[in-house]
Length: 193
Image 1 (spheres, rainbow, N blue to C red):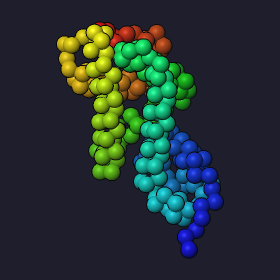
Image 2 (cartoon, rainbow, N blue to C red; image 1 turned 90 degrees about the horizontal axis):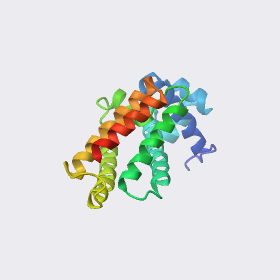
Image 3 (tube, rainbow, N blue to C red; image 1 turned 60 degrees about the horizontal axis):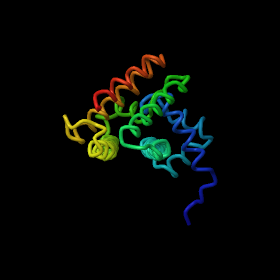
Image 4 (cartoon, one colour; image 1 turned 60 degrees about the vertical axis):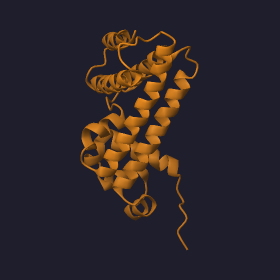
């Protein structure tokens, strides 16, 4: 008969995510994860299959939380351009509230692990594709409304936006002056108008 988990999985994931967020995948040791979660090594292996599987579970949970936050923020936007503006403002708030300059776990993962583990690469690629599709939809609707220009296709602008967001979030780790980051947002939006 399999063992029954006697811990709060959501709490363990939250604690493990914080370790990975603070240290990155490579620098996070099993002992760090044991200390943070209160689980012993065998419980981590039995419940998650090891460090890589735990990391992947944390990434998936982080992605889902972020997507929910994004949808909540842009839910009442009047149009696609306003939704993009609200999205960028959400990222600005994240940067300004990030007192430890940890950045976005997904962005950090792409720079640290994007080409090191095939399972991570596949996850990041799928995440990028779904986010670009999401942006393409927003931009396409705004182009149909005449709010975003038609100099580029919606998918071309979506790739530009994805790249801009990644750069914006990375820049925010090193540089968090609100006025200058707001200018970056204005410049990104101006490209679309």
